[in-house]
View 1 (cartoon, rainbow, N blue to C red):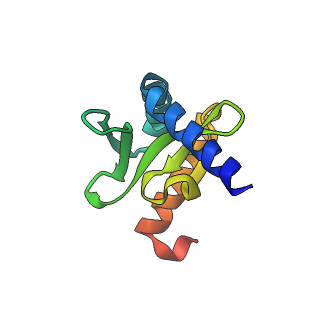
View 2 (cartoon, one colour; view 1 turned 180 degrees about the horizontal axis):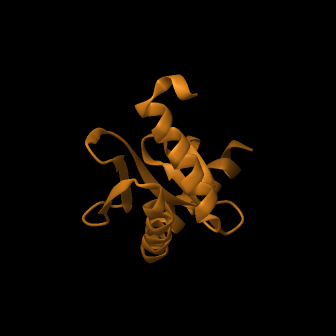
View 3 (tube, one colour; view 1 turned 90 degrees about the vertical axis):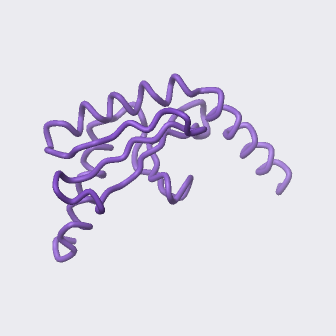
Length: 116
Protein backbone atom coordinates (compact mmCIF):
# COMPACT_ATOMS: atom_id res chain seq x y z
CA UNK A 1 0.00 0.00 0.00
CA UNK A 2 2.79 2.44 0.92
CA UNK A 3 4.60 1.66 -2.31
CA UNK A 4 1.48 2.46 -4.31
CA UNK A 5 1.19 5.89 -2.63
CA UNK A 6 4.84 6.64 -3.38
CA UNK A 7 4.32 5.72 -7.04
CA UNK A 8 1.22 7.94 -7.24
CA UNK A 9 3.09 10.87 -5.64
CA UNK A 10 5.92 10.38 -8.11
CA UNK A 11 3.53 10.39 -11.05
CA UNK A 12 1.80 13.53 -9.78
CA UNK A 13 5.15 15.28 -9.29
CA UNK A 14 6.24 14.31 -12.81
CA UNK A 15 2.95 15.55 -14.31
CA UNK A 16 3.30 18.82 -12.39
CA UNK A 17 6.87 19.41 -13.57
CA UNK A 18 6.09 18.45 -17.19
CA UNK A 19 2.87 20.46 -17.26
CA UNK A 20 4.43 23.90 -16.92
CA UNK A 21 2.44 25.38 -19.85
CA UNK A 22 -0.79 23.99 -18.41
CA UNK A 23 -0.02 25.50 -15.00
CA UNK A 24 0.75 28.92 -16.53
CA UNK A 25 -2.51 28.83 -18.50
CA UNK A 26 -4.55 28.01 -15.37
CA UNK A 27 -2.81 30.73 -13.33
CA UNK A 28 -3.54 33.26 -16.08
CA UNK A 29 -7.23 32.30 -15.97
CA UNK A 30 -7.21 32.71 -12.18
CA UNK A 31 -5.62 36.16 -12.46
CA UNK A 32 -8.42 37.22 -14.81
CA UNK A 33 -11.01 35.95 -12.30
CA UNK A 34 -9.30 37.86 -9.46
CA UNK A 35 -8.95 41.19 -11.28
CA UNK A 36 -12.59 42.36 -10.74
CA UNK A 37 -12.27 41.62 -7.01
CA UNK A 38 -9.59 44.31 -6.68
CA UNK A 39 -6.65 42.07 -5.80
CA UNK A 40 -3.22 42.68 -7.27
CA UNK A 41 -0.97 39.91 -8.47
CA UNK A 42 2.53 39.17 -9.66
CA UNK A 43 3.16 36.30 -12.03
CA UNK A 44 6.27 34.42 -10.92
CA UNK A 45 6.55 31.96 -13.76
CA UNK A 46 10.30 31.95 -14.34
CA UNK A 47 12.80 30.81 -13.06
CA UNK A 48 10.69 29.00 -10.45
CA UNK A 49 10.47 25.23 -11.03
CA UNK A 50 6.70 25.46 -10.49
CA UNK A 51 4.95 28.63 -11.72
CA UNK A 52 3.46 30.76 -8.93
CA UNK A 53 0.92 33.57 -8.75
CA UNK A 54 1.35 35.98 -5.84
CA UNK A 55 -1.96 37.63 -4.93
CA UNK A 56 -2.10 40.58 -2.52
CA UNK A 57 -4.00 43.75 -1.69
CA UNK A 58 -2.92 47.11 -3.01
CA UNK A 59 -1.07 48.90 -0.21
CA UNK A 60 -0.71 45.73 1.88
CA UNK A 61 1.97 43.83 -0.04
CA UNK A 62 3.06 41.93 3.08
CA UNK A 63 -0.34 40.21 3.25
CA UNK A 64 -0.79 37.82 0.39
CA UNK A 65 -1.04 34.27 -0.87
CA UNK A 66 1.08 32.31 -3.32
CA UNK A 67 -0.98 30.07 -5.60
CA UNK A 68 0.40 27.15 -7.56
CA UNK A 69 -1.16 24.63 -9.91
CA UNK A 70 -0.44 20.99 -9.17
CA UNK A 71 -1.50 17.79 -10.87
CA UNK A 72 -4.14 15.90 -8.89
CA UNK A 73 -5.32 12.29 -9.20
CA UNK A 74 -7.59 11.46 -12.10
CA UNK A 75 -5.67 13.44 -14.69
CA UNK A 76 -6.94 16.79 -13.40
CA UNK A 77 -5.26 19.94 -12.08
CA UNK A 78 -5.91 21.91 -8.91
CA UNK A 79 -5.14 25.32 -7.47
CA UNK A 80 -3.12 25.07 -4.24
CA UNK A 81 -1.73 27.44 -1.67
CA UNK A 82 1.96 27.07 -2.51
CA UNK A 83 3.30 27.20 1.05
CA UNK A 84 1.06 24.30 2.09
CA UNK A 85 1.73 22.18 -0.99
CA UNK A 86 -0.79 19.42 -1.64
CA UNK A 87 -2.43 20.07 1.75
CA UNK A 88 -3.29 23.60 0.55
CA UNK A 89 -5.87 22.55 -2.05
CA UNK A 90 -8.13 25.49 -2.98
CA UNK A 91 -10.27 24.42 -5.96
CA UNK A 92 -10.15 22.46 -9.22
CA UNK A 93 -8.58 24.32 -12.13
CA UNK A 94 -11.73 23.96 -14.20
CA UNK A 95 -13.47 26.39 -11.84
CA UNK A 96 -11.42 29.60 -11.64
CA UNK A 97 -14.43 31.47 -10.24
CA UNK A 98 -14.59 29.15 -7.21
CA UNK A 99 -10.82 29.41 -6.74
CA UNK A 100 -11.07 33.22 -6.89
CA UNK A 101 -13.78 33.12 -4.19
CA UNK A 102 -11.59 30.95 -1.93
CA UNK A 103 -8.54 33.19 -2.45
CA UNK A 104 -10.73 36.25 -1.82
CA UNK A 105 -12.00 34.78 1.47
CA UNK A 106 -8.50 33.79 2.62
CA UNK A 107 -7.03 37.21 1.89
CA UNK A 108 -9.97 39.06 3.40
CA UNK A 109 -9.53 37.03 6.58
CA UNK A 110 -5.79 37.69 6.66
CA UNK A 111 -6.36 41.42 6.28
CA UNK A 112 -9.31 41.55 8.69
CA UNK A 113 -9.05 38.57 11.09
CA UNK A 114 -12.42 39.33 12.71
CA UNK A 115 -14.23 38.54 9.42
CA UNK A 116 -13.81 34.78 9.73
